[in-house]
Figure (cartoon, rainbow, N blue to C red):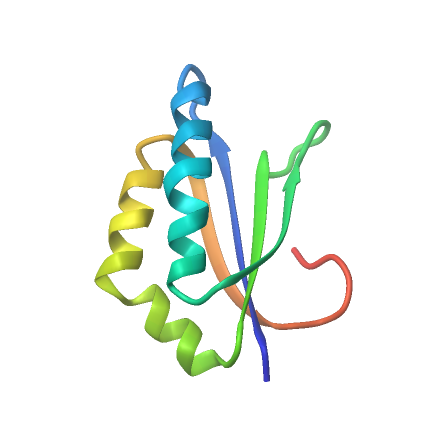
Length: 100
């Protein structure tokens, strides 16, 4: 069964430019290299929800857990946390449509 990795966060005010450069040049390519297939990215424009929501699909819970416990994942996430706050990650069975 495919698993959806759902990540959400808010960009730290004043770090937007550095954040976008990191995400485009390092984070997204790194996530894909680890075996996650990026499926969606959302930006909250209005309301009390995380500013950014990113989804990726992984073939199986075991593989997803292996990825998020790897040193490569730790390094990517550590660098991401320099630019974001209120970070959350969860694994869920892949369903059709929007998942939060």
